[in-house]
Length: 145
Image 1 (spheres, rainbow, N blue to C red):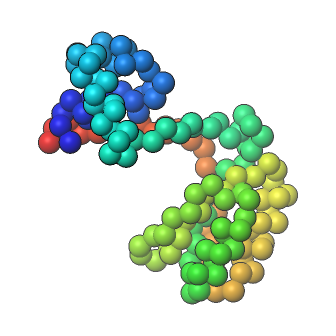
Image 2: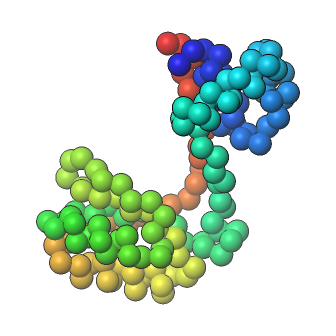
């Protein structure tokens, strides 16, 4: 990826709704070039548009991360995927096999879910952490390549 493309991509990451005129002004890249780069990024699919939700403001104040050790990873995955509270599920290398991020409206629902998770066949350990976003989606695509 060329330096100009990375600069446009960084601007889109800061504000995906920014106008091409604003991106051109912020990067010093001509407007027509910004338009071509954005079109190329959309065609080649490194860019997709999504919204970042403040889950607490929409009624889900309990956001937890769970590191799961499971002998039967498939059963744990099936259980987690069936939960309407699941936001993200990652497979991990190392001792913990899975990481799940879940959202809950209240603590009793969260506790009920965790009790059911611990009863899933093969789940050896579930380490629970309450999450609070400090910084989100702010990685700067390197311009030093």
